Length: 70
Image (cartoon, rainbow, N blue to C red; front, side, top):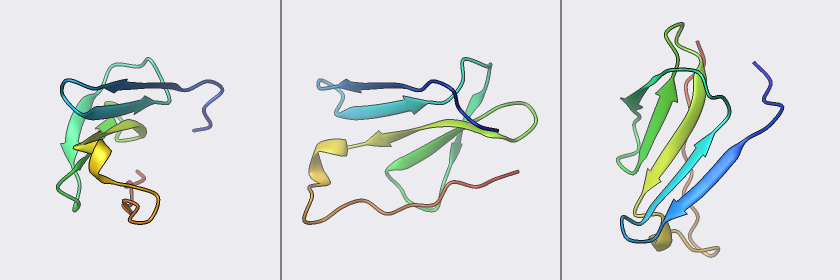
């Protein structure tokens, strides 16, 4: 799946960064990194992700995580 357009937004009150590759219906799924949640569609394709506590990941100490593929 190739994204033609992505949506990115940051909620400062919740310190949450969200990225969406698709407007398709999906659900949140935990990853091995406690700050990262995947959004997957009904076929298991990754259609986005969110990062809780995003402001703590600075350039000198970036977050590194893997998203699963179907």
